[in-house]
Length: 88
Image 1 (cartoon, rainbow, N blue to C red):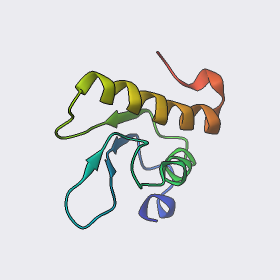
Image 2: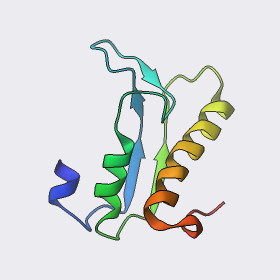
Image 3: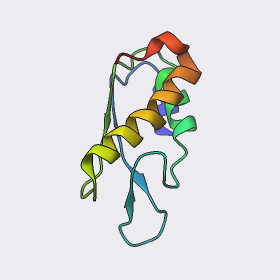
């Protein structure tokens, strides 16, 4: 909700995902409970978003986490801005 109330303010977005429980249960982005479609729509609505950082504090397979995060977040960027929006 905070992102929606300040459109155009965010140039960077740091992305983590969660299993949703009360205990820390970090997941690869796109594999948890956070509604990234809603977050990305709000963040991109102001036109300032330039960089997305995907993170997982303790991944079992860091390369898999990077690939999974890139695919999940990239698909949302493509859906919102068109197929040419993603570098890479």
